[in-house]
Length: 298
Image 1: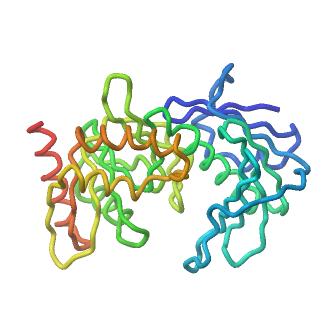
Image 2: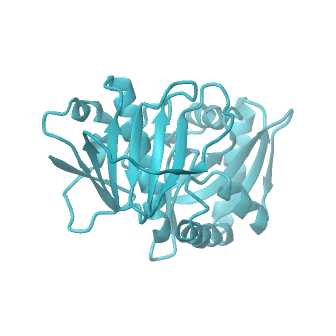
């Protein structure tokens, strides 16, 4: 059985047996259901077994913070293998074998629980999407996004710095705000040169799986501070700030070149800021006033 999904204008296919219990786990993908296409971005199929492979480590972190997932990347000749588990302390619960161009992939479940299967499917689809969409001016970003006044405002930052908190402050104190995504939105530069932000089926711990889109009003990197100050970034700071929040295997030349084109365009054309802030109402008001004024003056 094949189902198609479309995220930020890119359609991909998922193939699983009709009776697979995994189909019942995919409610977060409902709003992204699409018609199958002749040339999908990629095809992911679940399998009962994978061949024995000689693997060479490419990205196998020696240490991870508590609570982080296990995502170990290996080279297998011309293909790539990812071994995954919901927590780094757990044994491998699934394996993803990707073709060298990331357009075909096979996913093997080693654990049959619903939580483990959903983790494997979500991460397999996210990785394939980030890798295979990079040449098309598309970025999968770690950010929280608020929609307001027909524009999308992205809040970046390391885990725990307050991205979601800042979004919640906008929702509470800035009239007309709505949450577009709280963890993994998609940035795409269109043929018209406009950078747009899209909702996705991937939103971390917050269930916000909305098939929505808006031109980017501003990109803001959140930093904890004892005051509320919004400062415009220069072009190099904008590029570096967004680069550090993008998903993708940057050692792959095709992926990194594609990301560079999108990042360069966005850094040159979208206002980006530092937001040093407290977790209070004034932070949302200072940020909203500053980014919307910049957007009005553009």
